[in-house]
Length: 101
Image (cartoon, rainbow, N blue to C red; front, side, top):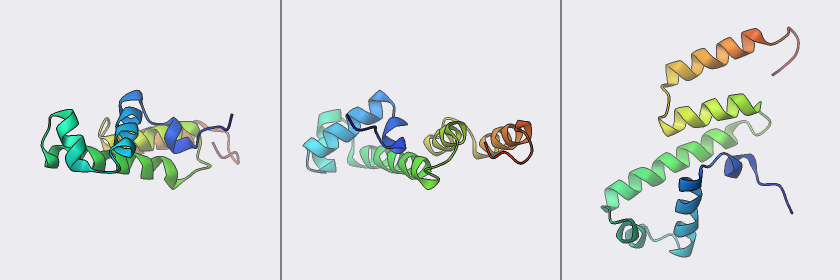
């Protein structure tokens, strides 16, 4: 079996289910909004959040798994951007000199 791309592997079960439903609905946000019982703007906001997560996970495909995870958490709104920057700076500072994490 082929390994999943990093951006897909970084999706949680809820986001994976959203993508599955999106595909089965042929990309119809109106249909998805009905399935989830939410308004179109609410569903659109969820899709926008998911897009930011995918972009963050795809931005640096060869990135260290921790860096990719922090980027996804920031994109998801789980942690603040400033906190993500601090975490990554501390992580990089902890790495041996001359070795990219």
